[in-house]
Image 1 (cartoon, protein in one colour):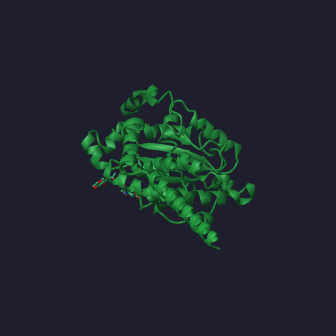
Image 2: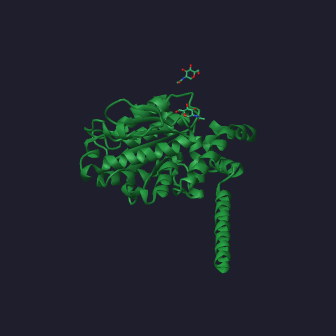
Image 3: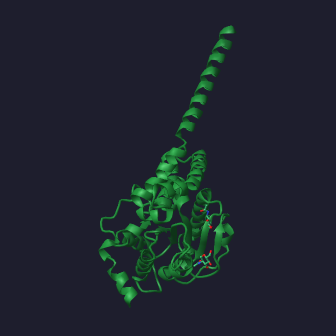
Length: 321
Ligand SMILES: *[C@@H]1O[C@H](CO)[C@@H](O)[C@H](O)[C@H]1NC(C)=O
Ligand SMILES: *[C@@H]1O[C@H](CO)[C@@H](O)[C@H](O)[C@H]1NC(C)=O
């Protein structure tokens, strides 16, 4: 009897010890202030250098402007890790504290046709994941969310998208370039002298571009990049494209955007090999690619031919014209 009691006590002690160690190691893995500041500063000084124009050219100004995002980033990493996100990925995601985020959603017929309505379900889940994560970076939520064709958009979005996405009237063709310009860029980037944060535009499509010239989308992106440059804003708009469903035309579109020698640097795509429907299985890997793929070169290989090649030539020419 006594032996059993002793064994039980020993067992309990071992269990407590393990629980304590596990908690301890979990705490160690949450990045602290120092680590997050380093991460954010690294993005600004190494991979997105034009952000210095927004966040400060001198160490002193940069340090001051990074205080708030750093604080937010630490809270964010803690929450993400509690949700089961791996600490490295969580740290990468804190980079979102430096950006505003807008979402443009394809509401062409293809979003509801094909694959038994699965696309819309995937879309809802996807938008909700993004909103949830981004709302940790900025509690005001998504700067703007719009459908390409119809309906009004949402601003400062933090809610669940079920009703908005489910009750929407789908139809027509995806004029991605036209919608991107009209609904997002003209309102939140181009000509906005007050843009205080860089903008990350997430476009979700279930099909290829239709109803506009084939190269219109690229021209819209190029014009925006050039305009921002001319305004001395540098690279402060980045574009991310994600495919919902299995449409091969959408896959071709994403591949083409990704490997564009001039614009690829400003564009991130979720590789079409990743299946958004299975996102729950590798949710964090996918969300990291979608949310910070365009920002962090580690998540997306750097492009060798930046827009430099196009030079200021076109911009000057446009100004003269
Ligand atoms: C959060 O986002 C809103 C727009 O939705 C923006 O006006 C505000 O400045 C952002 N907050 C911070 C701390 O950047
Ligand atoms: C920029 O801010 C000023 C003052 O806050 C405001 O008057 C002006 O309309 C803003 N401009 C734009 C393009 O939002």
